[in-house]
Amino acid sequence: MDLRITAAVVALLSSTSAFSAVTLTVPEEIKIIAVNDQEVRSGLLRSDQTYKLDAGTNAISVRYTEFFQHNDNSHDILKSGVVTVKTPELKDGEAYKLALINAPKNFDEAKKYKDQPIIGLYDAKNQLLVQQAGAKDAAKPLLGQSVLGKSVDLTTNKVVTPTNQPAAVYTQTASTPNVATANVRENASVGQLDQQLIQLWKQASKAERQKFMNWLGEQAN
Image 1 (cartoon, rainbow, N blue to C red):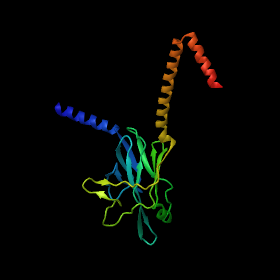
Image 2 (image 1 turned 180 degrees about the horizontal axis):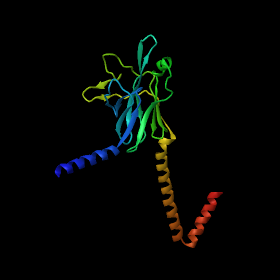
Image 3 (image 1 turned 90 degrees about the vertical axis):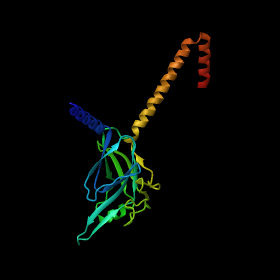
Image 4 (image 1 turned 180 degrees about the vertical axis):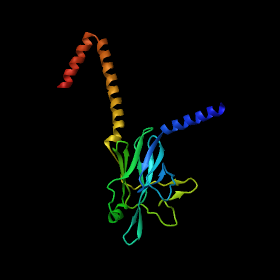
């Protein structure tokens, strides 16, 4: 009996945790380096990967990396500097994805693209929420040193976020909740003021009301 109860509790907790997180899908051309400045390790051979993130805002540090096989059987691996995407508010249980914006179509385009890749965050409806361009002078990875191309504190696995990248571009879809909240608060304040004026008018004497009307007339002139 106790074993069955324990198993049920574990299943319930697992189910609850699944809905308290955000699902993020990442294509193979984008490698997640860190989330909220904490290093993320991933395998060398990757296809599309899915990650679980906490709901709310997150700072996702990524790198554009792509393998090119040439006709003479030689190959190149292109890597960009670190790009950190600061997300808008991500909702519990929702699915999101990262993607390259204006992705290169061939090796020549990719050589230029790696100098300043543009990463987009999309929601489940494929609506762009935010796009972030990388810094043109971002440090590139060096063989035998940090694979992050940035200084890393090996005792905490903390990644230094690039500070010279262009400002992020947030879409109307991402900013709408904040605007709506502001409008609700503004409308609530206006409604409270209206009620106060009505109460004052009801409590005012005939003479006080006349003075008020005279004052309004003066303001209109």
